[in-house]
Image (cartoon, rainbow, N blue to C red; front, side, top):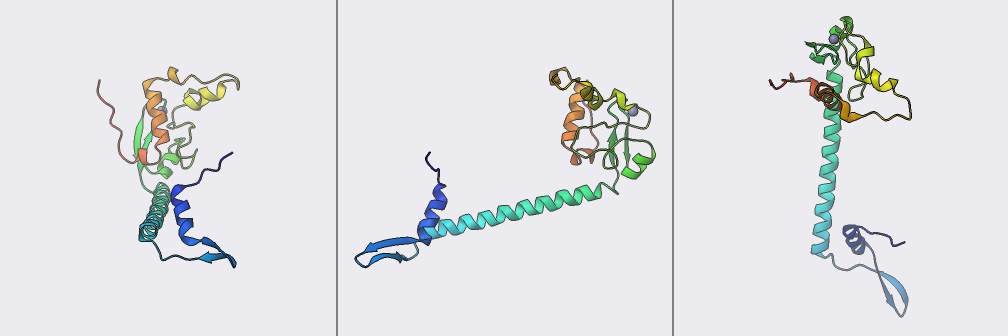
Length: 168
Ligand SMILES: [Zn+2]
């Protein structure tokens, strides 16, 4: 099986180590740095470092957002009755909401209900009722349920701004 080699890394390797076979044997030989390779490699390394920095920064922002969800108010949407409230997680918990971060996990499908609605009416409960061998038919979802799933997938960011439903 042929080994696929990253072309760019192959070039970088060439710069670092070259061997020359002479009468006295095999010797390591260093050429003058070739700018067309060295500069490219340097630029690549710099870009790698930058994208690494961006990833770290994004992770840090996600962490801060997640932490802020413990104290800041955000939108709570009941998937059953459609009620919505802009409250903190603590207020929601005290009012009986089943909502992350106290109940469930942001971004993971489970129930999202107000204090008045039963868990048995939720999409998650319906999915749990399915037998293992049965597949859940996603095309049978109502537009409200599709919006609910999309909102959960986008949590917690999807809960910061009020969701305005198109008037039809
Ligand atoms: Zn409700």
